[in-house]
Amino acid sequence: MIEGKVLKYGDNINTDLIYPSKYMVYTKPEEIAQYAMVGLDKDFPLKIKDYGLVVAGRNFGCGSSREHAPQSLKYAGCKCVLAESFARIFFRNAINIGLLVIQCKGIHEKTDENDKLQINVEKGLVKNLTKNLTLKFNPFPEFLLKIIKSGGLIEYLNMKT
Image 1 (cartoon, rainbow, N blue to C red):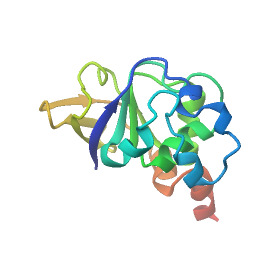
Image 2: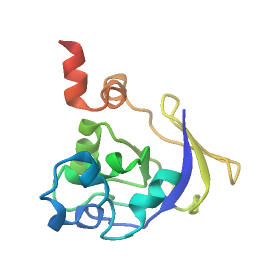
Image 3: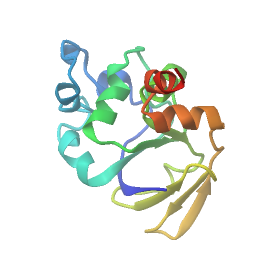
Image 4: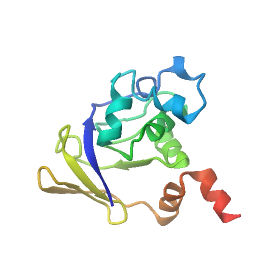
C-alpha cells in the first residue's frame, strides 16, 4: 500500500520539463534529484518530499527517451506517478529504474492538488481519501511488480543470479 498527497500537473508534460537537458551533465542521484520537474515547477524537489505522489493528465513523459527524467522523479522522492496516459518510452524507462507509474482513467479529473491517495498496486485500486472515492486501474503483471519492488531491472536481474 502506498499513500501520499498529490502534486498535480496537466497534459503533455515532456521530458524537457521533467528534467531539462541542460542538467544532463549530472550523474549522481542527489544531483539529478535537485532538478526534477524544474522546467515546470522550480519548487518540486522540495515539495515532493512532503507529498510523494504526482498526478498528471495525458501523455506524461513525451519527448526524448532520456532516463534522467524518471530517475530525477525517483531520486527526488516521488513514490508514484499516476496519469491518464504515458509516453511508451517513459513508461518503460520508469519501470526499468524502479519508479512506479500507473495509468488510471479519470485520475486527473477526479483528483485535486493536496488530495490524499492510497494505492493498492496488487489490486489495481486508487482510493482518494480526501474525496472518498475509488478508481480502478489494470494491475501490473507479477513480473513487472517484481522489477519495480526490486528497485529496477538491473537490481532485479542481480537478484536472479
